[in-house]
Length: 155
Image (cartoon, rainbow, N blue to C red; front, side, top):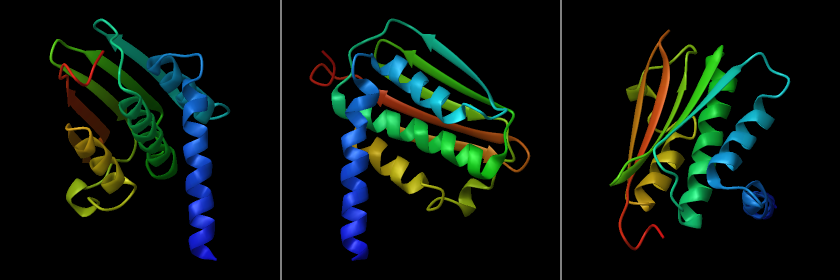
C-alpha cells in the first residue's frame, strides 16, 4: 500500500512538471514557482539573469526546476531566511544556476544525505554537471549548479 501511494505521488509530481513550463520559458517558469511558493511569506526574493538565454533540453529544465524548488523548500523549512536570491547565468560553455539564502545555514559535511541534497546531486550528475553546496551555521546556504554546454545538449 505504501509503495502504491509513493508511485501515485511520483506520477502526480511528474504530471505537474510540464505545467510550470507551459507557455513559458525556463526562467519564467522558475520565477513563477518561487513566487508561488513564497506568496504569503515574509521572504524577499530577487532574480538575476545574466548572459543570453539559450534553449535548454526539457530534462535540464525539469531537473533545474526541481532543484530550485528543493533549495527553496529547504530554506523555508529549516533555515528561516529573510532573503532568497536566484541567479541564472548563461556563459559560452556553461550554465550556472545559483540559489542563495541568508538563513541559519548548516554544516554541509553533516547533511550530505539529508534535506534532499542527495537527490539534487543525483540530478546534476545525470545531466553531466557539478553541484556545489556552501553553508555554515548562521551564514546561509549557497547552492550552485554548473552544467556544461555540449553541441548535442543545447539547440
